Length: 291
Image 1 (cartoon, rainbow, N blue to C red):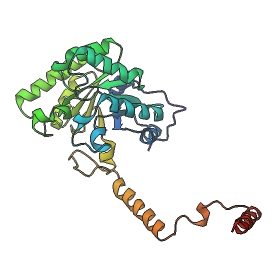
Image 2: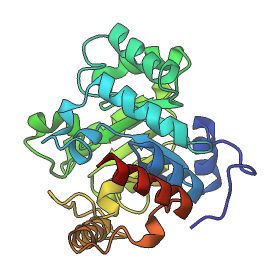
Image 3: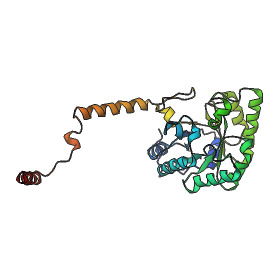
Image 4: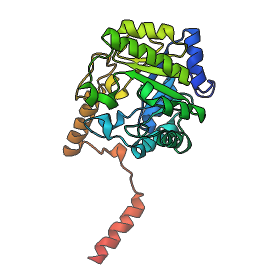
């Protein structure tokens, strides 16, 4: 764990990400959806925090990310912002918040920055959202792209399978990555694509690639925090490394608390507030006299 403190470290910006790629320094990102998680991530020295639309699944219990709305995302981004002093804060534009029109995309990207305090926004897709990306970048809002397995399109893909496995699909992904760079994106997430292809794309781009299930050759990595902490049990992607079984530890702590309450081991005297004996004696006399 990093021993850096927010007092002696400059804030990470979109430009910092590009500089880190140039210097060959890997970028570490994780998701956060609440103040305490953001606080600890920032203290640990994380480079970037993504308020992902994955909040719908891992925090709200939804079946897909499609149920995340702008109001939900703004609410959680505000909470995360309060805990972040150093890291780059990226907010995920949710399903149908940018696809409808360039105007809608620009308005919602502006909400994230103006209302929620985000440093940048992320959206999925390439050529089909080129106009939206260009408008957001022109407005001065940094944009992180997202290619490969894009969860908002899982109906189109028929699930969450590996993407860009054919010559045609791989060529299209390379072209779209270059397009995102030309449009002014400061980085691009590559999700669930072959590691060899991700390495090739990373070499071709001047902006950093952030991998999630895309191998070690990307310029950085991102994971859903609930996955890497063992707090999401519905499924575990192959690309996730679990650093802690926090869910099991939390459940154990809850069980111990329930047992302590039922056996009256809690609260103990050390958890209670005594009254001045003379005051209590007077109250007892008053109660007895009232009888």
